[in-house]
Length: 384
Ligand code: BJ8
Image (cartoon, rainbow, N blue to C red; front, top):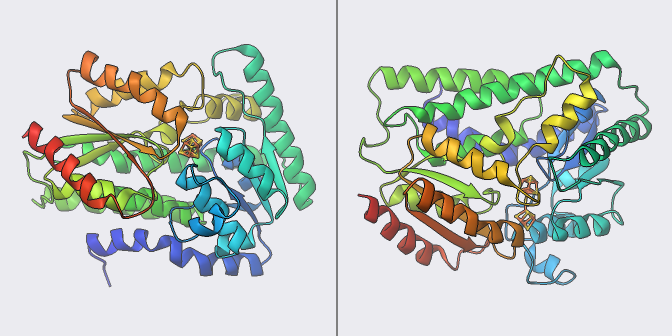
């Protein structure tokens, strides 16, 4: 039976739940599972070691009370949720992971990794916090080589030149089709709602056969385009076009993106991890594979970097490219690096682009849903 677009988007939304069974099956068939938490993890090395990479960033508030018995309450919900899942053994992805890989990004995450190391085998990559200088690059390249060695040792495999190059090509292909999918929203009016785009970008993290992800995304992009060409318009022409930036959205999308779209706006660009930040730049296939991997990953403009001018440049590029009417920034409670960067983001959006900017600090609870809807409603109305 041919599925409709809403059914396909809901399918991506259910991917996290459905992936539980899939990961169990893969595990039983002898596959090794590597749990990851961040866009800085070089997935190519995990794939080249014939293992599967599974995202373990918590997006639910359920395990937070358990985490708060050990962690400070005044900590980012993403960290508390991820830790709570590991602590309570409630998350099958964490349970089935043979190895966890983390990076020294923000303070809370890197200290949580130390604690996780008492529960599971853990490999922590030392991430330098400057993407411009040579010493930082050399250090990161050596961290990439250390991860290669750890994968080989942990799983008793050899990562050959051929395997790493094949993994690079595969992940690059996935990035290209992901980009083609989210670039659908360059159209005006966009051919899909931002919440459906977000469900899809989040859902692909819980599909483990990379070629299947590529095929499904290509087919989805084609279907959205052909329905648009046939006259399907899910978004009104005058809906203000919103760019969302800031912290990862997995745990707050239903609250924030839905509020934007229920108020008459449409999210056309996600600058966050999972969107533009992780997919715009490819690994250079013509270079030494490890140098090329190091170059790609160290250039991710996350707020843990200092300085982080590239984020502002990327933001400006996207504001112009997507013909943006307003920017909404999401700060997860106690995320200091993104929170301090809001000053620069606001200046850039208001000053350079003359556009309205709204910053929302939130967590995974539902207690501020009404307040967020009111603030976003007023923001969108101002643009109307
Ligand atoms: S590359 S955004 S996935 S670190 S929101 S845990 S920064 S206190 S998630 Fe992130 Fe990697 Fe950067 Fe992306 Fe800390 Fe902030 Fe929480 Fe964060």
